Amino acid sequence: MAKRPGHTFLVDSDSCFGCAACVALCPVDALSLQALLAVVDQGRCTHCDLCIPACPVHALSIVQEVDSTALNSVPELISH
Image (cartoon, rainbow, N blue to C red; front, side, top):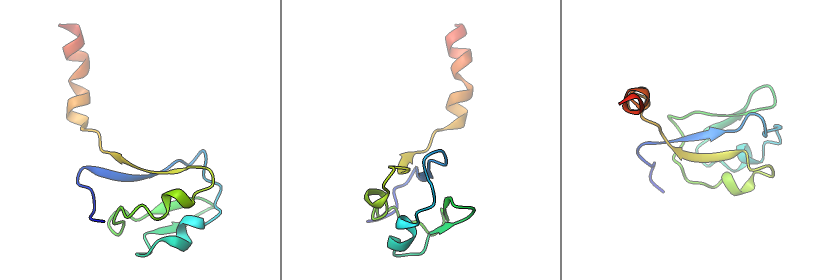
């Protein structure tokens, strides 16, 4: 699977407990454990999704990036 433009890989640090199931499955070694938390190297991650179903606590996801410039204009839009 090709990397999804405008998306990023996230690890929910409140859910992840460092089991390393995702690390073991990553074909490009984009995941590692640091202080019992999965950490992703965004530059290496290909968004292949192999690790996501392996997580027993559903702490992994690939989400669309939020455009911060659009968010900054929300208060201005609401006030008009």
